[in-house]
Image 1 (cartoon, rainbow, N blue to C red):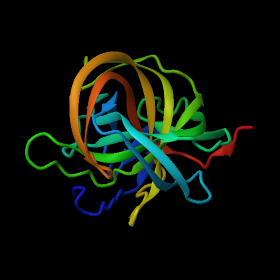
Image 2: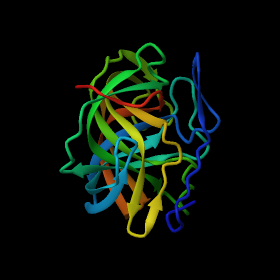
Image 3: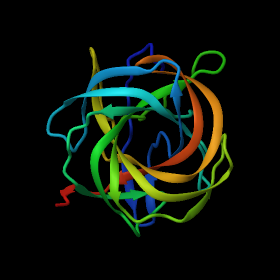
Image 4: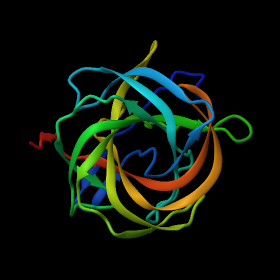
Length: 248
C-alpha cells in the first residue's frame, strides 16, 4: 500500500509466553531513530486518541524532527517489507497524570516490566522511503503511535549489534526514553484505526553516532526530505501487559 491509497492496517494478536513475546504477525521489531531537519517544515493539526485518552484530542504537530527505519537486532533480521516512521513533535501537549504501565519488550524481557510515563511528546506516522522507482509498501499492522515520556524505569547496560544500520553495528542500549502506544487518528476526512492497541514500542537511548545522510520520504503530510545528523535511539517492539494506573 502507498499514500495515494487509504491506509488500512491489520495486525494479528500478540501472545505473551513465559519466555517472551511471540507474535502471529509483527510489522517491525526494531527501528533505529535518527535526528535531523526537514527540507519542508510541517505544522499541522490532527485529532488523536490512545487508550490513555477518554476522547479524541486536537493536537498541533511540527516536524518531522526524527526518522526511524527498521534494523535487525538481537539475532532477528529485518522484515521483508521495511518499516519507516516519521516523528512529529507535539506542540503544547496537555498535562498528563503520571501513569504506571507494565510492558514486556524484547530488550528487557520479563525481569523489569514496570514503566512510569507522563506527557505525550511525539506522534509517529507510518512513512515510505523514496529511493528509485515507486516506494515500497507499508507493512500491514504498522500503526500511528503516540510517544509518551518515560520518567521512571531501570536503565539497561546492554551491547547489541544492528544490521542494516547506516551507523556503527555494535551499540550500547541505555535508558528507556519513550513508550509509543498505538493511536487512532483523524486527519481531514481520513480515519486511521489502531490495529492492535496492546502493541507498543519502547524507545531506548543508544550511544550516539554521527550520521550525515539524506532521506526522501512520503507520509500522510506529503513528500519531504530529512537530513540526518545523529543516530541516537532504538525502538524495541513490546506489548502492554495491563491497564495503566495513576502513579500519584
